[in-house]
Length: 227
Image (cartoon, rainbow, N blue to C red; front, side):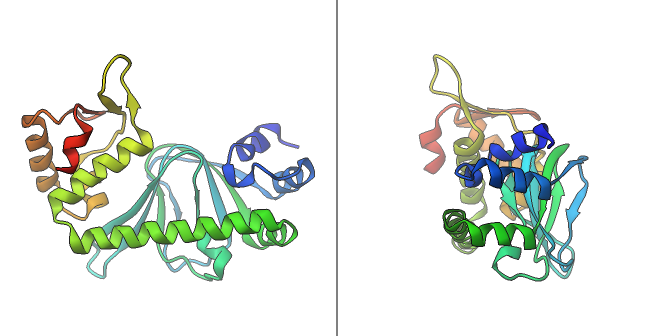
């Protein structure tokens, strides 16, 4: 048994209540892969064969319009799962998955994982709840596109990233986000343009709400992001 691989899998909340025997079976099913930055994990319309567990790095989930415009649906970090729609009967991928930086991924054949779910009702329930949660997040993303203007979407993005990845600076109320994202990346995540992202970031900096550079964002006043 590959102890390094099973250690990766043991650190996912959805799998925390599996028995040692079930974890060993899962270990035998899993294939660990190192994905390079910008490497495509899968494309839309490809057959859905595996479910993926992200141990390290970041993955973006995207859709493309007929004219080639990209909409980033989600940016995933360590401990997250993707490609899960196959477990609810999706025969083909409906989005693209791409590594935003070097990543470590475990993939498991969906037939084998489904068999494990059948044998473990608790895992089955967790997966059902997880898929429901992901669907709500996609719905929330679509509602933002419809009901929020570009500035509101960008402000909300910073808030969301602060909750997910932010770290409080010791002895301060400030929050630091160490995200290596260009304004073009953020534009795709918020369905706007690089120029509008730059304009909003400059305004937030002028208002002393954030400061930023290419590697990080420092949120000086989180409460004002919602104004």
